[in-house]
Length: 159
Length: 193
Image (cartoon, rainbow over the protein chains, first blue to last red):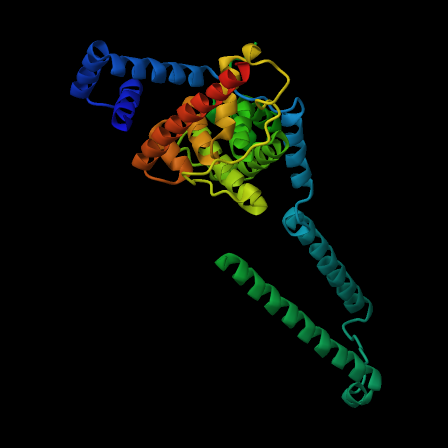
């Protein structure tokens, strides 16, 4: 029975060889069991082909496009940042520093006297020590965060 | 009146920033994608969610579409993967997708116990009912073959299996559909008597 069904489906799909096709056609014509099975299968095939597709809701395409727009808007700042803007800001500051330096050089007649504090003041001051240790703690904190992120992304990739 | 644009033309327009072109692609394929998703999820709400997710995923990776296959084949591959992932996540009904002996039990609003009389039901109703009672995999193969106009080779690509495997799956799906249809109709005749 299964073999008959399988052959009939191949016959209907047109996936059998020419010889097989002729043999099956002859069986359908002569054998009542084959003819009945063929008619049954052919009707099912026709009915399934004629089935209409299901319709999503009226607002489906609108929802899809809204979803796309929402995702576009929610892009991370890293990818949305325009590098030209960053370059322009950096350029402005560099230019400002150059102008200030030139202004000082011109007004000072080439003798710019900058009084830097003594090195011992820097090392002995408790405020500087607090500043230095805070920097070290912050650095360790950022290194730890960076390493944790790296490890978790590696685990995610391996899954 | 504007002539109908091909999928490739619409993709090119979308990639150049024309979102309306993608909206047209969505409109062209929404029924196919929704029907395919419905074969897996068996609920309209979930099917819409899967279809929506699939279209968004396709939009995001449209630039990587190499045109080695038809756009529809690529789209259905995404739908198939999204639907499978969604099913696995929810673990609905705890029935294996390709279980030969089990069928997903579906809450069918148009079940045999409905108040509608059996005489008024069309053959398409019984077919739809039988398809909804098939396993997700069987129903998906039938939908891809009959409605999404995909060849056996393309279905193999979508499902990630060999073409011979698709032939076997299709044959089994048709046999189960026939058996389910006969069982349902027998039940209806008994009801009438």
